[in-house]
Length: 186
Image (cartoon, rainbow, N blue to C red; front, top):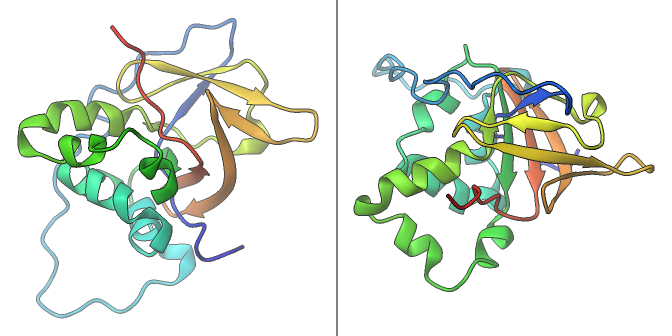
């Protein structure tokens, strides 16, 4: 798999006919990871990388990493104990938003809005594309749902975003998407 296509956020799959269970209230609000020793850590093998490691290592996800960090969600996605499905928009997906949107969301006074958007890209537990069914919904960490669309050729969309690649992590799966998923308006 292309090393550039490496990142995930979290999502929970529920059958269309069955209401999705409420997301864990603090699925992305886990306590901060314990401080690391002063000694630099050895590089991780691919099989040991977390969702966050994958995103940080991808040149196509620098905007996502900045957003996750500004939203205060990096510790949760970097925790090896999580079980996340993450829909990870590429830098190009963020660039397609109206001018100034990302800069505005990254401001400290907009942290709550940014957190909601980040949580709309993540869910618990791990859901691989092979397990997704057309028309199913997934309950996201922000308490809303997304709809999955699976074509006859096996390609997958989440709402209007195409899943262009998927990467396994030690704590979940990252589905790289070509659009930013926006929570439904209230």
